[in-house]
Amino acid sequence: MDIRSLFRANVREMAPYSTARDEYAGDLGIYLDANENPFENGFNRYPDPHNRRIRTKVSEMRGVSSDRIFVGGNGSDEAIDLLFRVFCEPREDEALAISPSYGMYRVAAATNDVRLTEVALAEEFRLDADRFLAAATPRTKLAFLCSPNNPSANLLDPAEVERVIRGFDGVVVLDEAYIDFADHEGFLSRLDEFPNLVVLQTLSKAWGMAGIRIGFAFAGPEIVAAMERIKYPYSVNVITERLVLGELEKEAERREQIAVLVDERKKLIVALERLPMVRRVFPSDANFLLVRVDEPRRVYDRLIERGIIVRDRSRIPGCEGCLRLTVGTPEENAALIEAMAQLDEPTPDGATFTPVRSGGRRATVSRRSRETDISITLSLDPVSGSESQIATGLGFFDHMLEQIVHHGGFALQLSARGDLAVDEHHTIEDTALVLGEAFRLALGDKRGIGRYGFALPMDESRALVLLDFGGRIATRWKVEFRRERIGDVPTEMFEHFFDSFAQAARCNLHIAARGRNEHHKIEAVFKAFARALRMAVERKPLDFNLPSSKGLL
Picture 1 (cartoon, rainbow, N blue to C red):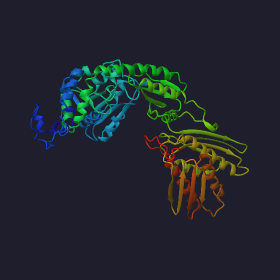
Picture 2: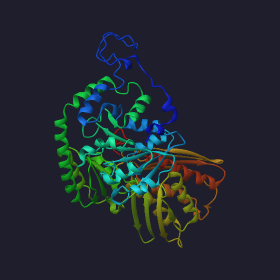
Picture 3: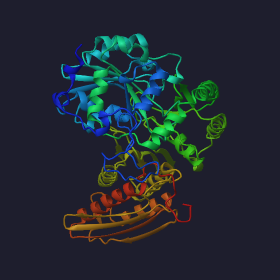
Picture 4: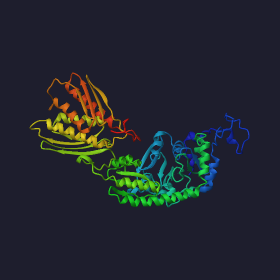
């Protein structure tokens, strides 16, 4: 295989950025080439653009010649991005990846405007080489495999990996970020066999240098030279170089740490499998576990309350209902097990949380009285394709509730049977109470939510809704109607609906609206209410604080 024929034409022809020091391999005495500050402080000189000292050390450790080693300045992510730039013409060429797998393959493909086809792994996260290769097209230049895979943690069958390498007409990128934790040496020693193979490794995992951000691509000299040609000249700074060289001298210490983590992985599996909420602990060849649990989002949120951060992977196809748990120190693992063992507590007020495979905040609440029988399942963070069904027996009321679903971005299953032969009052009031209770329960501890309000115009009407999930209860209603009924709903019941909702949800709710068309006016209110709810319940990523100066909601 002529690897250079796979390069983008502009990469084959371009001349790299060069410095005077590229032409000199020795130690210089007087540096007058790079317009640096000449006063020595340890950092005033540019680093070696080719990272020769690091490559020499890694060459000795891994048994790979230095011309086959690319040093990346941002873990393996820089190498992933550069490989797209070397091989794939934007909007023309394509790439393959397994699914589920590391999300940066998708991000790098999108950044470089390259179509990425993700091929689902078979049962038990098994690589099917025939299925994977069948997804390639004549424009497919790159194929990404991750072994051990993230987030499934399993080592891909080496025989199937080899079949992909031999059967693929482009370049196979084998990401071995977690190979140090597996009972397999990986493919690094077989580079000579496969000119179309690139092996990625990192110092972020087993070597404990995630904060330093450095990784490697091992490949044929032609591929490494092309990556060097297009990378930024000084992507690894002098501080990083010194730290890395120092840490690489501690190989024996790192091997001891890896042995501890592998032993802790075994203990953690045994402990997790004893917990009632745990449905499956998948086999692991990495320093983490993929664990299927009941109510993953609830488990995730409750662990956050206890200061334990794990990864919710339950929305990823193939990982439904799963959390990813990194193997920590013995003390950290013991704290995790203790916290999870304490999560099986009864839900207050007799309502129940439904096990949520989608991972969203969700609650199911039922209310049965002499006048009504109402059941609601509410999801604040529905997955794509979630459907809502609303049936109260009141057509216009259903239409208004649908505005909450559509404009709030919620999923709602609502069934209400009431004494409509007597009056609409009980059905509307109790629906509001159950809906408010569902919002209160689905919000959980309210960490990271937006908490507050929205305003909305509709044709000639306008509505203002101010909402606060702070725990205090108050309703202000400033909406007047000139008609006694809109559709089959008495207009006097709208104020009562929102007041009942506020009581059950424990929120402040101020509503004002005006306009000439009564239908538009109340519809604007419900739409603004929906938007207020969406803003108030929206969770800011990685924000685990309560939105309150008092530290309490």
